[in-house]
Structures are given as C-alpha cells and as structure tokens.
Image 1 (cartoon, rainbow over the protein chains, first blue to last red):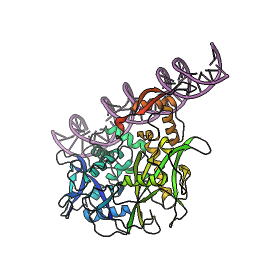
Image 2 (image 1 turned 120 degrees about the vertical axis):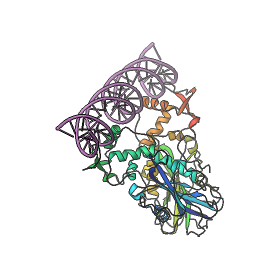
Image 3 (image 1 turned 90 degrees about the vertical axis):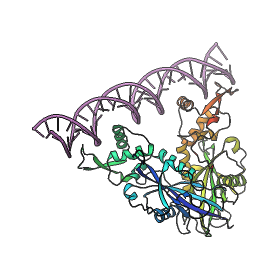
Image 4 (image 1 turned 30 degrees about the horizontal axis):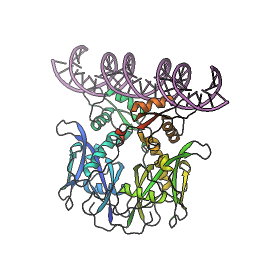
Length: 230
Length: 230
DNA sequence: ACCTCTTAGGGTTGACGCGACCAAAAGTCC
DNA sequence: GGACTTTTGGTCGCGTCAACCCTAAGAGGT
C-alpha cells in the first residue's frame, strides 16, 4: 500500500455506456453503446471502449465521466463501477490495469450525443472483435445490466424526469428482451414505491391519456453503492 | 489505455478475508477477519487490511493471494474481486488506487492460519478505526457477503469437502446473524441442487446420525464471476 | 351524436415459494 | 427399555406473481 517502488504499469479508466435506441431490424428499443476507433498500436483500427489514463487529480468516476464527455459528448447521470481488469497478458504491449465503469444515458441526454469521426454506436448484443479484452467486458456489463434491472430501480436512469409507466415498461422490455404484461408491471412498480404520480397526464394521444410519474427522490441514493466517504 | 505518461500513483491490492470463528461473548460462529499492523507512515501503528503493491508479473487475484499467504499463511479457495477504491484523498501521502478482493476460508484452511507479530484477527462487525478508508471497505465487504449468501452458493466456501446440512446451516446463521429453521433450510438447499449426498453418515453422535453431503461439482464455476479469458 | 379503435388501468384466479409449526426417525447414553 | 437430542419429512397459511379477464377514457371517423 505504501510501496515506493516505481511500477511499470499504467492505470486506465474505461466505460461501457448504454443507451436505448431502436434495433435496426426489429425497430424495438434495445441497448446500444458507443465505441471509439483506436488510432495507434496495439489494435490500431479496432473498436474499443471509450477510456483513457487516470489523471493524478481525478477520482475514478470523475475520470470516467471526463473521458466520456470528451469522446462522446455524453454526461450520463448514472455511472457505476463495473470491474477492474488487470491480467498481465490483456495488453500485448505494456501492463495495463483498467478500471471499467458502466453508464446509462437517458433519451434526452442521448440526443446530445455527438458522433465524432472515430466514434460510432453499435447494438450492444452484436459487438464483437473489439480491442484487448473488451468483448468480455461488454458481455459482462450486459449481464450486470440485465441482472441488476430485476432487483434495482436503475431503469429510471433510462427515462426522463417525467415518464409514463408505458415508457418505463419499454425500458424493461428493451433490456430484458421480452414483453411484459402492462397490468402486472404497473402493480409491481407501484408496489415497490420507486415512482410517484405527478398528477399530470399526457394529452393529445389517440387513446386514453396515461398518467405521468417521476422517480421517488427518496431513493436517488438508495441503491447499494459505494460512497467513499473516507 | 495506451498512455505513455508516467503516472504518479501506485496500485495496491488488498483483501478482506473472512473466516467463521466463535464469537468471544456469545460463542456462536461469526465472521472474523485478519488485520495487519502498519509499521510505517501514514497510519503507523494502525490496523489495516492485508495487501501490498501489485507486482508486474502477477494477475490481480494472484497478487491478492500471494500477499495473503505471506502475511497470514492462508490460501483461501474463494477469492473474488470486491471493488476498486481510488479517491484522490484516500491516502494522505501519495495517490494510491487499491483493488480490493474478498476471500472466504474454510475451517480446515483456517486451522493453518498463523498469527504473526503484526497480524491479529478481529470480529468483523466490530472493527473500527482502521487505516485509510478500510473501515468503509470492511463494511462494504460484509454487506456484500450477507447479500450474496442469499442468492449464491458461496456458503460452500466456508465448509470442508464433506459436510452435514447442519454445518452448512451454521454458516448461513453465522453470516446472517439469525437462526434458521432446520427443516425449511434443508428443503431450500436440496431444491436448488447445489449439494449432493455422498451416501455416508456421521457416526458416533449422541443422536440421529446426519447424512454427509458435498457441493455439486457442476457449479464450481457457476457463479456469475469474471473469467478473464481474453 | 354515436360507433370504433387503442391504450390505460383495475380485478380475479391459480400456481408457486416460503416461513411456522408438528411429527416421526434414528442413533447414544443411562 | 426409556429418555434425550438432532435429523428429516409433512402440513398449513400467507404473500407474491404471472396469466387473463374486464372496464375506463380519450381521439377520430361517419
């Protein structure tokens, strides 16, 4: 912990960013993620997760956020540590330990996403052939997302401040990849008390106007996440 | 990821090691963990998690295991990454990023534990006043242990190869801190198929001899854990 | 004004899981 | 043999959840 030995390794922070966009073939919402094309060896020309070296004066999450803003123009509200990857052979050149975060962006945030020359979005389930061990990382992030949405209200991170239950249900359906019964879904969500009605309704629909909800502010810091309040 | 900038930070790997030992007052099994006394600044004289700098030629988990063997004489079978802590202010001197693992040791492994001059075991729930942010880390590891035992067969990591259901139940009771109904516990465990009977029974007890079980080998690599098969 | 279409939202039912509790089984010890 | 202790199996009641019904409430066409 207090070693003064100079280490021959670099520490990087990368992020798996998920946004929900229509699938190119089915048209149904599905997770996408942005990748950046590598412009130098190793893996030059390959797609890789957005990331960069950890700066001396930045916390880990801040570093992930800053890199993300620089490369993709995104500033996701939900940013959470995923895993630290550090096998000696994961990079063919120098030793690199990557602390990987994962993020969820809301549609209104997603609208501000910029596609730079070397940034492109892909359907998360289809990505393959990435640089380093990033294939494994993306797969693991997807598993975590699908697992966590079943026991945690992270789905709220995918919708705007005000939303209908149908929109929230669409998020669950997009992530889980299957349809859900609207009535049962409604009961589940209301039972867990993570949303509260705003009293307003959507107008101008060609059917019964749905009620608008917002996520319960009491649980904004509820999920079991690390707060390094040292 | 491929930065060649020389970073002014060090990367350490520490481990929260849990073993079940009788509580000093109640006598009932409860989680304990080993701590090492710091012999230099910062936090000289304070207790801290066993750990050390990451060596160039070691994977992260290997580093955790090696340090553990050196300081405590333990080689736990269950070793799992917990979290990466890297706030800029978590160490008063240089910037240190710690990748923390947590481990579970079985009673037969625990018997080989050596208490060095600067190593001592403590009741996990009572530790306090540790160096750096290690209080937070221990608390988080305990939360994870208690959460994970409810949905994953990690309890097997706390028992020997052959065990009775009563022994396995004691593990759950020790971790969760409450008694469980033997009959219901039995049904739950058998229903999830994580154990299989060996056919043998314990003899020499002053009551009905319990059957011996072993954990189902099919699930030794079943838990959703990262395998960096890059 | 009325009908139709579509989605919101509520109700009911049956299967399942789980905790509380009871009862039988199988050994040792006296 | 009888008392004792722990294992092991059985039952019952409750809460949860998925599947499936129904009604409610708007827009738009005729």
